[in-house]
Length: 166
Image (cartoon, rainbow, N blue to C red):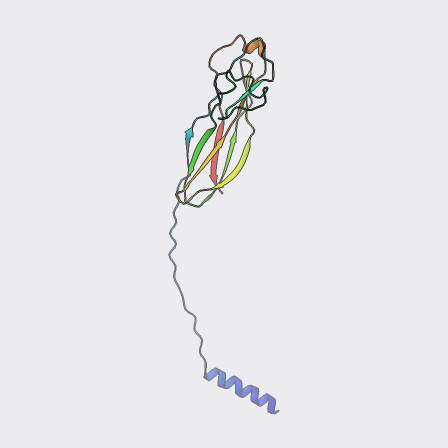
């Protein structure tokens, strides 16, 4: 009985010696939406291509600054010591944001030459100025020597680059 009375007394003392209240805090949310932008800073380019009697189907040339050491990989390049240029893009938007990007190209063959690029999706984080640099390359493959040797001139191929916030 004494234990029950002391518990009741303790509750009475606590209820007279304490207080509780609920308070409110307000926050102001500001939304900043910076559109993601893409600028091509370097256009993809290939060195001059050469097809002659010594050329073989499967010979190729890459859009890279340093030519490939493999003779077949650079056999379509007119000068094995001259490279091309990778396509380089600047993606800009909200600083420190994560972006995902994809580059791709449809299957394209013109006058015996095939433009090839491995489709790729990757991610990057924009730096403190809100930018990231992305580059990629492609190759031209001799698909049909008999057609190509009779079709000199400029050929145009296309590729896609897409970037989005993650």
